[in-house]
Length: 189
Image (cartoon, rainbow, N blue to C red; front, side, top):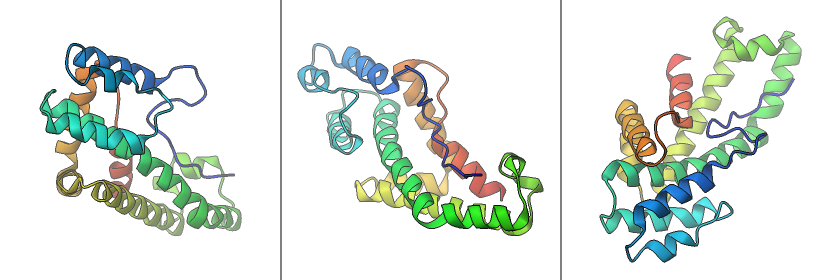
């Protein structure tokens, strides 16, 4: 059995392209501004590392509501942090999970029902959740988003509210930040 890092942003096995929809919505919002051409050049292949400074510049230009630029920046940084967390899982935790699952004879339901798993298995999940949460905060800080990092640590509910309001500004209701699941896992263990 493999413990896999969950990517909450979108289903990688269907044809829905969240990034293309977001780019279209952003282009619609900035049509007729000096940013139109720059935003129009975005493609789903534009790396998140290139998006963050663009979104920060859009925020600085005050072209969109605060929640909208909050979401854009948070989503791009979250995408980077998700990749880094997946790498962390593979490099430092995957084999530990596998060894413990084999030693304890745990099946799929151990992951699905973590609350009933043995304490040492829950402790390993908590350790990973804390390491991933620290990595998320560090990723925000690495992009100069110290206020977002602080908000994420000190008031994750407000972070989620701003994130969700920004998502709704562009795409309507429905998206849940991957951070919501991560902080819930960290808090509940």
